[in-house]
Image 1 (cartoon, rainbow, N blue to C red):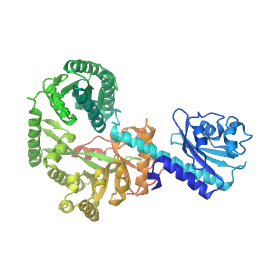
Image 2: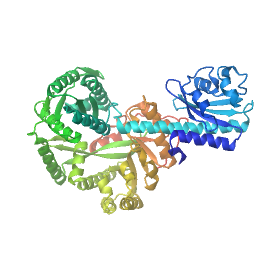
Image 3: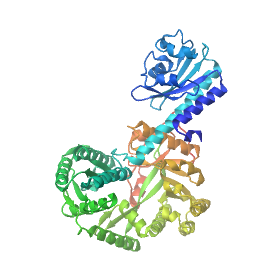
Image 4: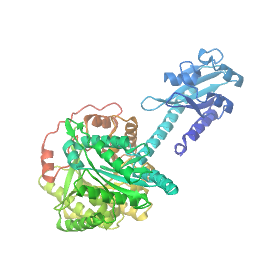
Length: 601
């Protein structure tokens, strides 16, 4: 409960508790910023004027106990302030207050950065005794945990408002910032334009270069958009290969110039993994106030205009017009096609292996749904799944996937293939259906499968729903012996307190944490935190999106023993799964690394 409070309050409580158990001590904490300046954070036993005198002091090799400890990154023990050269410039500040000794301990981040210092002042000259030494070390560790929690919270806030791949504002932050721009335009009576940018043939590029290459392209596109959109433009990533721009105080002529400038910049070739790529984009444009006065509607209009640009041949931009209603008609046609596809069983399943990170042995298979339509082509899940949710087809889709998944697992087992488990993602709507437990039991019985062979994946957002019916449904599924997995865990920090309320068996570490493991200390710290949470709750942790050997080794070193991703296998059809199981895999066996923990399944 203490750690849930703001950092200054936590530091104040730690200092007060030190002074309670060790009355001879006057405790304080100074934060150290990125420029090496110190800022008092807590000092309940020191006069305010003393703390004020320390504000913004720069750390250095002879800046009292705290400034020196921060500079060296090591504890500094000054037993006699009056005679120690480290205090030469500061003893006149300390001695009149009766401060005779000061011990300081650096508080470090996981990457070695000094975040703060913890100081123990005394009114008599003295060196540390065993009790005070141990007390200081324990308190320094507590302070370190509190600072780590604050940094993790800031990182999660970053994830909530910014796209982890490109660093651009996400849709949530776009809503907030664009709302401010719209309000200003409305007050000033000026125009404003909204651009919906969608990369052309991105799926083909992504399939050819792989996700790593596709991600490099998206990052480069983001940089070019920011560089060429204009100083006052707001640039955001919506999802996938879709970006949005808001150009304040921009009329039609200025927006045309911006559109041409952006498309010219995007067309510049770049090399990705020895391949030369000349990207292009289709851009749809809507204008405030002519086309609407709310961001959502302006984005909708711009998106329809973007589809018109694609239909006209791509690499174009189009302004929205009232006649552009074909997008809505296409959505209706796609919904009808999805209904027909479910009836005609036009959908098909792919499977991505989940493996033991140590030796590549198969742990289970995750089911992925694919849809290739004769007219619409390959319809991605992020398009037809939301459509199914909006149109009320999601229940039928979940039932079909569960049925086909169990049928395939039973077929593999009859053929003698060893597939331990199969994981099926179930929508929140189906988890809210009280008939789900019976449906699961009947499906397993029909195919002669034990309950332990099935894993149902739920989204983390379900943890936040205070719904007795949902809890009863989950409990009934658990009682059957079916295992439950929390998908994309770590993307909803506020749900951590609710995790113990549901009988979850495993956590899926979201790929957004895994992708930055090599370059981002915060990502490593957050990934390690999720793994520790799983370990402490005796839950298996499966890392998603493992794409290279360095990621695999880091995850193993932190005690994560299962993973999935392109390092091991792309999603496979049923025939390819059998070949994959039969093929030898060259994942290196290695001894347990220091600090590795056992996962509990």
